[in-house]
Each structure stands twice: as C-alpha cells, then as structure tokens.
Length: 120
Image (cartoon, rainbow, N blue to C red; front, side, top):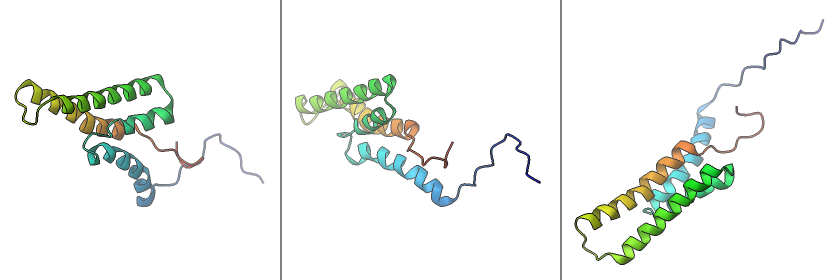
C-alpha cells in the first residue's frame, strides 16, 4: 500500500553549529570591512548589498554611504590637524556614520545566498 500525501512539506533538518557559523560568518566579515578600514571603505557593504539585491532602496542607501564617505574624506582634507567645536563634531559624526553605521547596516540587512533546498 502506498503512503497518502498530506500536502505538508517535511520538517527541515535542525541547524547545527557549523551551519549557523557559516550563516553568520559572511555577514560578520562584510560588517568588519568598514571597521577594519576605519571608515574609508564604509560604502563597500552597502554596495555589495545593492548589487546582490538590486532594489532601488538598496541603491539609494549605497549612494548615501558613498556620499558620506566622500564628505568625510573632504572634511579630512579641508580641516586642520587640531579641530575644535563644530568642525570636530562634524568630523566625528561622519566618521561614526562611515564605520559604525555601515557595519550596523550590513549586519542588519545582508543575507548570504543559500543553496537550493537548504534554507527558507
């Protein structure tokens, strides 16, 4: 006698530590790029996400991080070595946006590709 199909898919296999690590490692490495480069490559994670997802919002965010990186480099070139007050505040805001903001963005939005049949 043949089994009757119930219409529900089989339960997925439980995740092991190895598969959980391989799911987190690409995201962590991409988030480490702006931190390791001290913000100079802050646009790279958002550019990778925009290329992979091809959505308008992702391209706009990538353009925003690129503009902030260019503004930060211009700020570095135009300000003296010892800054105080608003110049220092602007420099720190741009630096935090290009490092911490880009790292946080890539941690929250990047999803690595999964093999067919291994993920939702």
